Length: 364
Length: 247
Image (cartoon, rainbow over all chains, first blue to last red; front, side):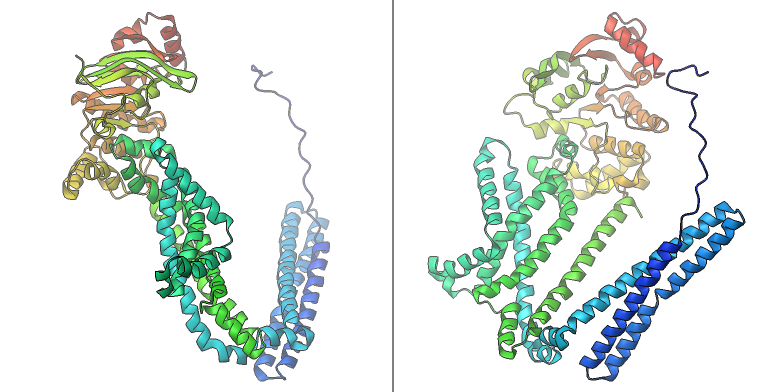
């Protein structure tokens, strides 16, 4: 008998040993998906070869694709073999080995399914590209159009990069000032807090394209001296104004996420409010907001394309000129490729920075 | 005139009164221990002395100079009054050395090399010289708390407030930290400490105050408070502490 009400002697019934789970169903699904993937890949490879007039390269690419699509057959076969193994072990009443065999076989079947589905998606994408007698491929992926427009496009793309980098620097500074303005203490800070709040509300509400039109076309009318400015600078100003409002919110969330004990510790050492912000709060907040900040920066890079509406010769405007010249959308696909090429390394670079910072603090 | 005079201090959060008229004098070189249950106002009282909390009534004086109310240079006050927190509150983005050097260089007017030398000396005296370049997340709780004590000492405060500095530590790490406090007490540093380490309070305190529900219910020498408490609430509190094996 137990001496305390906290402990009871009642036991649960002994568990029944669990049976190995079935394999055949999964294996059959894996095999069927593999066959569908192979069929679609073969069709896509034939279309690819047709479109390129039976060229050598397209033939090689097609053969490689078909060979790759055969891969899921291997795990599917292993799954069926595992199923036989499972039945054999069960007959011999070896329960635990049978459970392990079934788990391994199910895993193989799932691998077959995963790779087959990937093959189906890729083949489907290829088929779509060669749909309409190669109409899709012709419209978006014409090499001659790329060759013709490349030099002018890459030159125009420098404008995008330059605008993005300069605007990002402005946004970093101005956004932080706005965030700090929104956190100013006391009654003295109240009117400034209000201004910062209204600014953020308004510029997050106005579509970026509207701000660009107002600033690029409006500033020269309002300030005649601005008419002598390169309109690219006005574009930078308008993007900076829009994105500062977003980034201010990101900073503010970062500053708010630092535990008040950090501020208490800094103040208790005699640091002033400003010193506490500069040496303790902002450095920690900035580390925390790097990922969302990068998100806004990628968005800013893409929005440099909006400057095309203000007749600034950036990459999308140039690609549209080529498009109407050639009656072909491939230059615009090329512009898309440019943006992809500069964005992905940045995302990886920031991942690296975050990992490095974490590793250093953990002493690894 | 005592060195630190706390005179009828009232503190409320909204309608909840946490300190209901606390008065306490701390002489120079004295070590005063505040004991009492959680929520009795020990930590709040310490935070008020350091002006991390604003008080609603009463006055706090250091060497006769009023340090509460409008117009006081809080940054100057805090240079004289160091505080160490229960949760260490080291700055995680700085190495231990930078944590210690921050205040001397930014507000103490020390040069980098002076501050570094002094910081290394202090770290050496608590057995942390080889951790100077480490970041707080790499250290054990005991090491972090020792670094936090050094950080507060680097400003050469005239009084130290210790807010349950061993409450978050594993039992085997408590000894190292208390050893440092013991050394500071023997060195003659004026200290006001909130603690649950009754044995330690008994050993170092020149005065023990029992706080209950926002006021000092009983005060006296450590011997008197622990061995013959007069108030019933003090007796209850101490008997509960004994039951939990902490005295």
